[in-house]
Image (cartoon, rainbow, N blue to C red; front, side):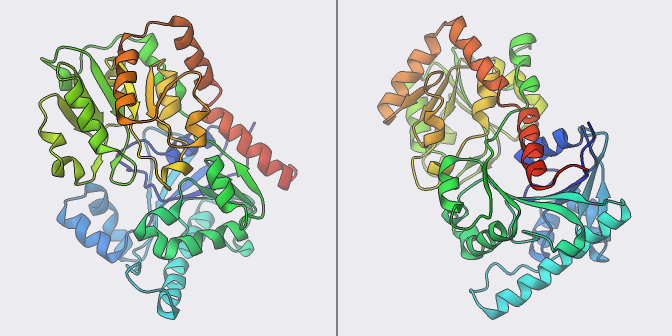
Length: 406
């Protein structure tokens, strides 16, 4: 079945260094229709810092952006029905206080992005399309009806008020986007409570997984990854963004100290100074691999004796339904997690939830010795109900209740 074309505007650029909700959704959407994937724009400040860091994607896009033109790209991972759009450069304005100057410049930036989208829509002859903004209310949180979208969705995936940078202006802009959107998707039950006063129509839209990728852990046999060469003992693993707002680094340090003969393998981009500050990166049995592409994860995951979700329990994480839970379950792995949200507690029958640091460490010991094929199969079956295919089917069902198919 072919669906209406989709314009997908996302905070997560197409060259995002780790797997993202947006690209997973876009990949699934492209199976039944055309997708224009609009990247978050670079500001002047982003361009300067990116050039100093030698960002190859920025260098390739910069000439057209400087001319105020769209840059168009394709992705090998999404070969059909998919085009990336990089808008022109915008002004860095988040440092400004709330007020008239910010509002004026925000409208200016927003106009740059809206014109970019309109040009892309015209160039690719999109008509009566679905518009999705994934967690980027700073630009095109919604689009005017005259631009031709048949339905606008705002996709809220985190509590934007819990990051000082995004909260400054983002919370107001996000609530406006929810008010204007035909549908607001939220990825957790707590986000549903937070956005209920603002959204015209609110839908719980949980994160999912590229299940077929992670089930290779079960169906394939991979050699020992180079990161683990010369390592004995078991591997305790985490896959995800190692940021400063979610991860409990003192807990990770205690885990490494409690299992000195095993390896703590941390896979993902490091975006926090705390591991260095507390000496986690100096421990001999701790490995930081850095970012890995989605298809490079199964060999690492296959060699993990158990996997972790070591999240802090705070106001931010209470709104999180973690992307990684269904990835772990699809691989049949034993998960040890903190009890940070209502949504993670819904997985209690198939994962181990810890209430304290000591409890977490004890449950790792239990996870490393577990041998329960029936429980492994139950995890896989749960993951099979949380695929991106199922989520995109839900998306179109919701859209069709608003816009009856012709």
